[in-house]
Length: 457
Image 1 (cartoon, rainbow, N blue to C red):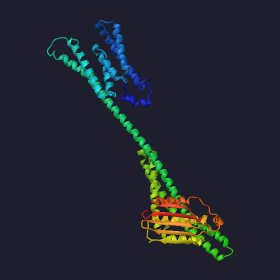
Image 2 (image 1 turned 180 degrees about the vertical axis):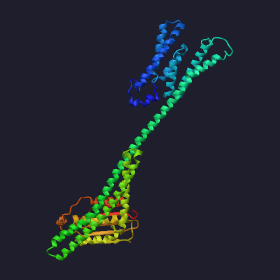
Image 3 (image 1 turned 90 degrees about the horizontal axis):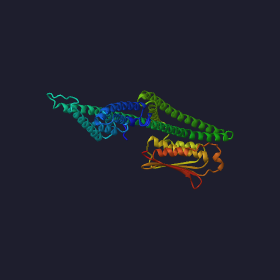
Image 4 (image 1 turned 60 degrees about the horizontal axis):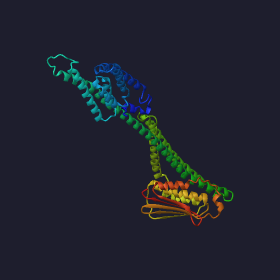
């Protein structure tokens, strides 16, 4: 079975009967087959008379032979072979022309097309030559009569074979080209859809990362300051009547810590506002590219670009701010002093030669110590704590370890809530810089937090 390019293209959306892709194609083939049957029936009459057969036999034979054209789309080779077979009977010329066209336009190999076309050419040439020689076309003997039969035969053979074959080859090549372009367009559409889906995933991932980073920053900024404020407020409540001077001192510390927390929150909100502005600008500029990829693709791509731009600007802006005002290792003594002022016994020791690090490294080291001290305030109030910082050749290491609290009841005296995300946030920060983070209880009943960060980040 051989199908034409048109049938193969419409195979997925076939709406016609049997092997036809459309009802219009079926009607066309039925009409051509009817014309071929009439032609062969008319031509079968003289064939039967010359062969000494009954006229009805010639007519029936012509009708049957002409009806073969009905299957030209499914079996073009069979149609051409039948046309070649009945050529000596001087019938089936329409079948031969339509059959050669269908054959050349189909997916049949070129060598078969050339062979059948050659056979059809030879058959028509021989029949025409015999007719011309016997005087069916011109019977008188005049000047040039010797070359007239070959000329007429060659002209008729070329006219019956060359035009349909050439037209069929052109239509088949054009059909295959259009089919290839359609497949490429479908492939491009699928690729664009896949890119849009990936862009949406990247945008969602970027938004999730940004939300996680913002939550971690908010936790770092608020948790430590507010924890100390709660501890001092509890101490203030305890000594307000017994020691007014100490109560005033604790109240001043609470005020200072509150102002510091507000200052850091304002800086963070300022960075977020600048990032939102850039994201909005990116979305407005991306709307101009709507005609390239459609409605969904630009919005997704612009969403990714906006999220990435906001993230980059947020980190760069935050880095610039922290270089001047952000937390760094130089403020570690002040951090320890704040915990000591809240009643914690803290021992700070620094090993190695102090040197400068990248802002994100110093900030991460500071936040690890800060979060560890905050956890001591929450879960082991009154426990002695040791803070160790070591400057090594290729890395910086820090460790915060506390002893068991002196009284079990002190751990919850301040009633500090805990979200359980502090250790997770510290581990994420350290891992983002290629470092190692370890935390867990000690054999003595305390808790230890250790981190090592490469000096190059």
